Length: 284
Image (cartoon, rainbow, N blue to C red; front, side, top):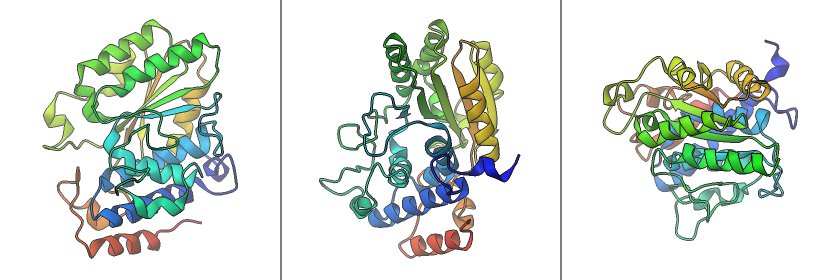
């Protein structure tokens, strides 16, 4: 692929830099509270950069514009990552970064639609996001609105029965305006996802349910751009899923190396160290 494919569709800023900015903003927010689901934020930054700066149609100045593509955060504890993306997209002001997780902040530690511009749903009760996305996609179709619905969910949600009910419903209603994104980082609170429930061969499983499925390296921007383009451009009347294999704490090597990253422990003096490591890898 050519280098041009990795540039923000809205500007001449590279997607690499957009993803780096998302990681940096997430680390700065984590430093405010001394905690946060920073491993997930660092891992999913490339997915968010591709979503907001390559694939999605929205208006920064009007987050409720009816023609916007909807981005649903099923995994509410990933809010720190989405806040960083919303700041990078000029939907949230970066000046509010230091309020993360504080009383009266518009950025609570778990995402809530009633607080935050650009936050489409209140996520966190895992397994519910895709069902909401199905209803939203059906509503848009009935209104003849051409917008897409993107639903970001975790690999842990693949163990929820409600997820598969939503999968079947989306096929039944031929929801070709629905794109599900699975962040497959293979980590849950009590260990690897693959040890919690039988998972594997994910793309064929979704295909068996009637979806168009792709599995990609979720930290490879070229692969993500190609997958998102294929999902949007598909002519078949079926829902689409992109399974993104991501690395927890991607971009900060000493955090990547830790055995447990679901709620990675970062000591007070390590936030600045993590930012310094990231700074050394800043793209153009």
